[in-house]
Each structure stands twice: as structure tokens, then as C-alpha cells.
Image 1 (cartoon, rainbow, N blue to C red):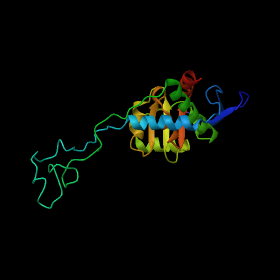
Image 2 (image 1 turned 180 degrees about the vertical axis):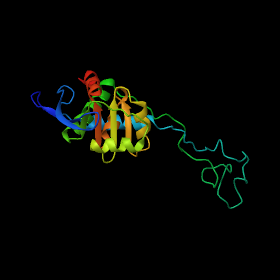
Image 3 (image 1 turned 30 degrees about the horizontal axis):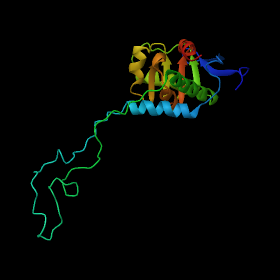
Length: 212
């Protein structure tokens, strides 16, 4: 989209009261949704979370001796060299999975591009909400759930702040599908898998500096 387009998001006060829509920076929310880059970023994050500790026993590690069970010829049986033969029950596994690392990295610009695309997609769908602040006066899940309901959360949501409030973090951790993330640690997967993205004004400014 061109630079002349305006991108807005619904805005609320810290108490959940609706207010005038917020004009979003065009440099950050340019409306471009690059699906291949988003897919690559999510794939990289999931791969980096894999432990890679799977292992199967080759014929080197299974129980059994090196002796030939019977002579090569004259018995009428098939030829065999040892009971650890992969064709035999409890024999070794051929080309089975072995411990390995699935980790791979993306260029920094590609990661930022994927996050920018994910945020732009939420803006287009009207699922990005800007609030003045995200905090809680006490650790209480019921109060946090009521606040999220005012902000239109009905399912999975990600709350973005410069530094997540400790009391709010404890209040929402028992709410299924709701996560609170610092703006500096936000990923494309966090945004993509959420039905509702709620960010503070400070977080939006910080994202603008990183993505603009």
C-alpha cells in the first residue's frame, strides 16, 4: 500500500473505557502482509524449541554377540552373520533418528519483517487495540478477566508492554490463551497465534523504533 493510507486502531484508557482511535505509524504498519516471511519466522521459532533428543539403537548398541548363529551353508536356513541383524526381532535400527539440533537462524531484517507483517495483518483485521497502560492493583484473575473482556478479548490474546506489570502477569497466567510479553521480546508467532493484540502506547512507540 502507498504511504498516503491511514492506519488506525481502537483505543482504550487504562480502565478499559473506549476513546478516540489511535493513528498508527505508516512506516511500521504499512499494510504489507508477507506470508512467506511470516511462515519462515514461525517455522524457525518452533524448530528452535525442539530438543532433538530422539534416538534409536543401531546394531552397535543392541544386545547380542558377534558370533555367527550357525554355519553359512548346509543347514537350509538363510545366511546370517549375527543376531543383531536389523532384519531380526530386537535387532538394530537402520538410519533411525539420532540426537541432533534443529536450530536455525533467520536474518535480523527478516525477523523484523515477519513481525511487521504479522502486526499489519492484525491492523487490517481490526484486532489490534491500543491502551494507555496495562497494570493491576492486585493479583486477582477475576479482575484481569473483567478488564480483558472490556478490551474485547474473547479467546487467545497477547498483551504487549515495555515491561510487563508483575501483578498483571500473575493475574493472567491462569487465563487460557492469554500471554503478556515485553515489546523487546515480541515475535511474529506471538502475534500470529493471537486473536486479539493489545499494546500500550509505549510499546507501540518502541515497536515503531525497531520496525520503522
